[in-house]
Every structure is written in C-alpha cells, then in structure tokens.
Image: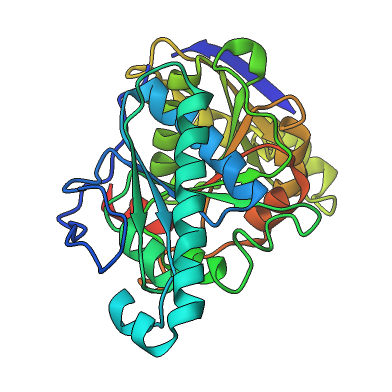
Length: 337
C-alpha cells in the first residue's frame, strides 16, 4: 500500500431539491413546521436503543453545522388512511400506538438536546404513512437521513431489513447508519480519521464531497482508499522489464487519486488527507483502514435510474463488520453533481 500526505476545507454539501414536506397536521399528530429540509438532518425514530444512539450522533452532527434536525416517527395508523380514520377503525390499538409514538418522540428530542450544549433546533413529526414511504419522501429534500442499527444483525435492521432496505434502495440523500453500541464522540482529531472509499466511478465526487464535509465539521483528517488488482502473474518477464513501473497496478491509480484529492484540496485547506492504494479486495482495504477511524463514507453502485441507491458487496461488508458510523452516498447524487 502506498500513501501520500497533503493539506487540503470543506464547502458544506447540500442536496438541491424543489421538494417540500407538507406541514398540515394530521388529526392528533405532533408536527413542528418544516418548510425547507435542504439543511435538515432527518432521523428515523422508533423508541429503540439503536434509534436513541442515532439521535445522539445526528444531534452532534447538526450542532456542529448549526442546522436543524427532524425526528420522524412513522407508521402510526392504518396505511393509506388518516389518523382520525384509523382511530375509528381500530380505536384502542391506534390510540396506544400514537401514545407510544408521542412518548418516543419526546424522549428522542430530550436525548438530542442533552447530547449537545447548543440550543439545538429539534423538530418532531408523527406520520401515519408507512415508515419506508415516509423516509423516502423526506430523503427527497433532506441533507442526510440517519438510522440506527442493532448488533448482531449488524445493519440488517437499518439497511438490509424489510423496511429500511426499501428506504436504502430509493433514498436520494446520504444515509448515515449508526451502530447501537457506538459511543458517540466529541468532534476532534483525537477521535480518528474519516475514511472514504473510491471506486473510480461517476459517484466519486459526491462521495468525496460528503466525506470532506464530515471531516471538516468533525475536525478530523481524511483517508482516501482505492483498491486495485495485483499485477497479472502471467505477464512475461521481458514485458515487465521493458515497461517497468507501467505494469505496476498501483502507479496509474495512485496518480489518479492524487490528482482527484488535489482538486478537492483547493477547496478544503483545513483538512489533512492521505491517499492510499491497496492491492486487495475493496471491502478488506476499507476494513483495514477503518480500524482507527471514527467514520466511513462509501458510495452506492448505480444500476440505472431506478433504484438510485443499491448496496453493493463492498458497502454491505463494511456495514456488517465495522462498529463505527457508515455513510452511504447514493449514486443519484453523482449523476446530479
């Protein structure tokens, strides 16, 4: 593995969209007015310990940016009906579910505000639509969507589960997955670097934008990793002697990644970064480099216009094996940048 040290500052990244979330309250719903989600961090809340940890991480992230966060509890009421209609159909069950949702939102808001010293703008929404449908709708305009994950199923419940797999397949903003047992740290270089995986795709700039933005607000360094194949052992010795370094599989990628990061370095002068080329599987290269990291940023593979985000084998392996937050950047962001 080869590496180069540079100095590079982040211009905040924010997804542009004309989407606006309706703030007309449902009957009995708790809704704080939200007219513009462009700078808002949206957190899925369900009252679980993993969701609470996601709220803590999102609160720290939002406080560093001085931007609002929105806590969303969805799925209260019969799918496709209003809360009032659901109450008429299933009064006892819906009332109890709504009471639980209100309590979960109130608890999550208290956790968010206790996680930071700032006067954090924390808004809450109780939605009757199904969770996947609701979160996908919010992702159209949100800066980021944050979900919690439970061990030992790793991210099966947060990204690969029945509800969240749908969210992951259609989200149009970055998704941060926060392990339940991750100890949320105060921003600073001592917490470890931000590791970002690059695959020489059209999504690399969007992934780097998210990674540099996070590193800047965390006060952390950035480590960019790219994995490539080893030299073909069948290459003739005479060819290797003649062409020398040009047969080194790391030489071309190293020049490419150095140029790419140098371009970003012109914008992000306050962030220290290193570039690394590994001759191993991409997932293993990321896992090796993430051992001392506080965050990993990866891109989703594009498989056409729909769905815009597909969890590939590398992202899946990282999500399953690291005990730190992972941000997955959808391929749609690369096409729109």
